[in-house]
Length: 305
Image (tube, rainbow, N blue to C red; front, top):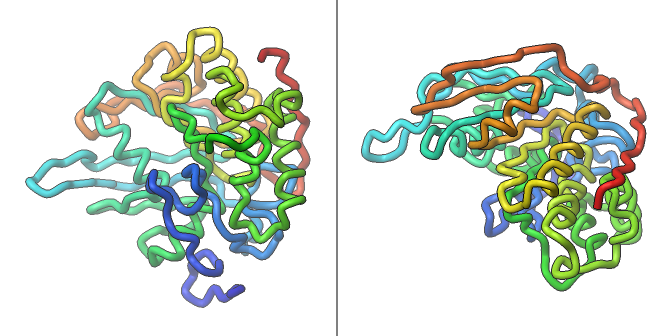
């Protein structure tokens, strides 16, 4: 396992590759991979949402920093035009806009799934322009968790094993991955559903499994793409309550949505239209507890199923 950092990039061993959904490693598109810091835990130390395990003496103030970001496609189509955006640690925000506004492209840029045509992107203190694709994959694996509208659970295996997939490339033995998966499922209120397979779960429960998989590695940033889009209103409300609870623990969460009602529930709303940020509302102090390395967090016990 290589641990050299001479090029200033995230240290990490072999690139785990990409899954069919376009995310680094993980058959379900979880974004997790090898343990770049040699901590034995992909994404940070157990028990806190912090990203100081990869050589930081102190975690950077902002998890996301975009400056003048433009994304153009062949034919002169500009999906993003001069976007400036900062997301502080332990912040909870919505990136909201109608179809075709550029919010999906912005998700891909923030999630390091694509590179900008112009401008700078810094994630968890790392300038992505300085990273090779291999190093970028390692950064994504360690620092970013993804939640999708369509869950992307692996059929035929239990909820616990689906969550454990999020640590597949962590270097941890299977028993430890499953133990941590059990803890993550308990945190999202599914301790009694660990052995259930996806077809035995409701839509809301499937999304909670997906959230548990996304946070089991304690990433710096959780990107939730239309997380309630496939759910009924009651299940959607329960999922949003869970995201609020995770944020109170210290998680940094960006919810990408077209739904203004969901956006209004969050402390900050970044509104995007025609590839530009047209409004940035409610920029209050982060609602979480902070991200000091080694800080524990309370478990989540959600009463709703």
